[in-house]
Amino acid sequence: MHSNYDVLIVGGGIIGSSIAYNLMNDEFSGTVAVFEKDPTYEFSSTTLSAGGIRRQFSTEVNIRISQYGVQFYEQFDEAMSVDGERAHGEFHQRGYLFLANEKNWPLMEQHHEFQTSLGVKVDLLSSEETLKIIPHLNTEDLVGASFSAGDGYLDPYGTLQGYAKKARCLGVTYVTDEVTKILRDKNRITGLVTDKGDTYNSSIVVNCAGPWAADVGRMAGVDLPVDPVRRMAYVFQPAEIFDYDLPLVIDVTGLYFRHETGRIIMTGKSISEEPSGINFAVDKAFFHDTMWPILANRIPVFDRLKLIRGWAGLYAINRLDSNALIGEHPDLEGFYMAIGFSGHGFQQAPAVGKGMSELIRLGHYEALDLSPLSYERVLTGKLVVEEEVV
Image (cartoon, rainbow, N blue to C red; front, top):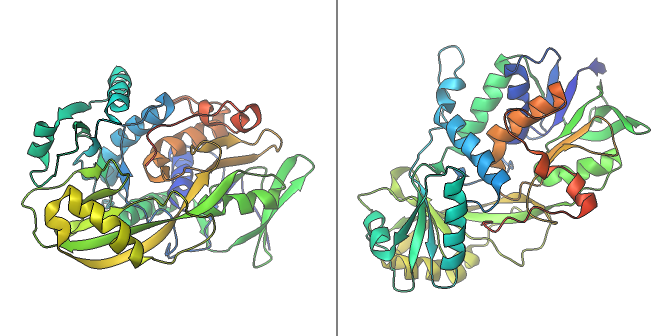
């Protein structure tokens, strides 16, 4: 089978679906097809994520991206309505709370000044003020915290489905086949082939394959510095159910925790030495041996808990600077990418979808300048160093 489309998007997670939605919502006159090999999204980085969005970053481009995202997600459920039915992103703006000790407090003060200069509403709190937000907190080793009340989290699956359903409503075709080959004529993209042997012709292919982005790059004959790395999350029942809502808390150790529905607790922590590779195995020993002591130290009543479940998802790590690679590849005409988000894809999807729509339709950015995240920095070595990576 041969089919002709104007834009082919490889990967139907939140980034690919946001690009597809934005193209059609921006009245793109062409046709768009999204290829998603996992239509259940069982192994999607989107649905396995914590669903958070924050504006507390150290670089302007990341702050601007999240400012756009917060405003968009505040209206998301209504904007993604189809036939009168609202979407179910369910944005909980309970804030992000970064805890600080004597070691990281000076850097937090520096970031706070920069964030507020860009219009982010973020407060530096003393330990006493932090206790007003979380009365159960152990603050013995803390100097204070950075808190942005407008940040928060959404339901990842509901948000993804909202994007995909709206994109389909606007005319996007979703193909549940695996892409096995990218077609090119010299330095120009001409289409792709699926595992069913079907050929789809197009002068534009957008790589949104997340942890599999480097595989898609190799299909096109280009090397992309993106590696899949496992990240695990857990949900537990604490011995005491709080009568208040937790923000998303980032401990000084890098461990995070927040409330889930029913005020059970979701938590996670990166393993710095985690090897790259496709790995969905859940290590319960890591929770018991490494995470539980941290949790019990920070919230003493967490010394008694019941682990309910755990799961593993994949970050698509840009091994150069842990920031996204966005835009057209300089050596392959028509090969676009929105990859390497290193755990920030969910929160950056609104702005990246809008920016990629503009770049494909107009050849330049208008709503937000995403050029600092272009592939050119791989060639020049002028990296975007983000100091607020969790």
